Length: 561
Image (cartoon, rainbow, N blue to C red; front, side):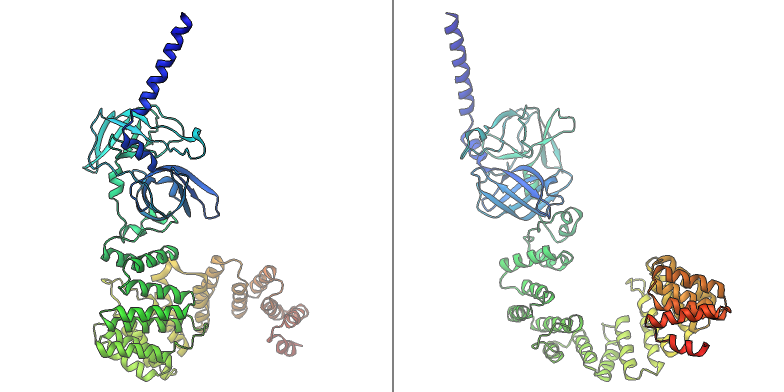
């Protein structure tokens, strides 16, 4: 009798469990098909992290936790049918609540985010990933629970608290209500006592915009962001995304697909193609830009600017269809439609590049009386005037105007123009004026100065016979770059010049110690030794300099023998 009693209890338990599993509402069972696994990868293809998530749209829209994406170069998901899909675009992120919204490549079975908050005590189900296509053991049933508590964040979104027992490997799996709507994604607390689930609607509401594309979180994710939905934001996103070539290219292609009749995407792609030396492709895209643009003058100007930039910054790659004449043709068309100073500025730059210095000079001067008046235009006028008559220092007055027109309100840095004036004075032989300008430049740019600056200024100070200042600067250059043998040879030569012979010999030997095949080191060492009454040694070092190919060595050997 006892045996039959335990059989009845066992059957009752099995029946109860069967009833519980089958008591799940149909929407909950349907929502379970929207759960997936997520795997992210490093740039070298190794696995970075794994998690779960849920599709919330039929076109690949999905949500998961953010952490697996940080540092990821690629990500894939596997849905409830075992289908693998790449993560194509990031659609929104929130680091505070560790949530991410993204889109995968393919159609998907979705569970919609719950439009309103569930009440404390209400019924809910945790949906583990369930893939039973080939292995029934892989299938995991929904886990029934109840909402322990509901808090509010961001003034309107529910933050759920659960205390149910959970199996392993359910990170970022969704909680759903009886309608199969997603309440939120599972997050463990640090103590492990409770489970949290920030609102799924919160992350669904997150949108990519032109500002967020360059924020710190997006910069840590190698997967491109989605194009913002608003046209104005999408246009701005194209402009500000240029620092990341891969993301900029993805946004460009998305823009062209979304707005095939607008010129912005084609123009951005033409820039990318030009940088990749795909000039035929860039020319085709710019023809579309001109065709699709309402403002033809802007289109012609942008094409002329593109051609000009290619000729200036990438002249080594030949492309017969793009010349200064074709760039000028585009600039002339733009100016004929709308005579803006910016279009004349491009014409002036092209004239300068063609060697039409007088015409370029006159146009730059004319632009100084327009709304384009700027330090740059004064400097360009100065450069054109210098090319007309290199020996005449009158052009320096225009550099003075460039410096005067720098202002702190617009944060225009005068340093480049002060450096240009220093170089102009040095070329003209006014060495002390040049040293003075180098000094002003050095004060402005002090945190960014390199060893080369101190070497250049030292060279000018030597010409100005300011030997003590020159010695200080060459010492600074060596301190900043202790392996540069040129600086040691220069210091030794300077010490020789001021008759500090022992010091000159020591520094020359240091130079040779750094680079035993450096001929200038032997040349200076030999001269210093000869002047220090060590003629045989000095001649041997001059001969060594000669053997290493130094052209100054033989005349000195002939002189001192």
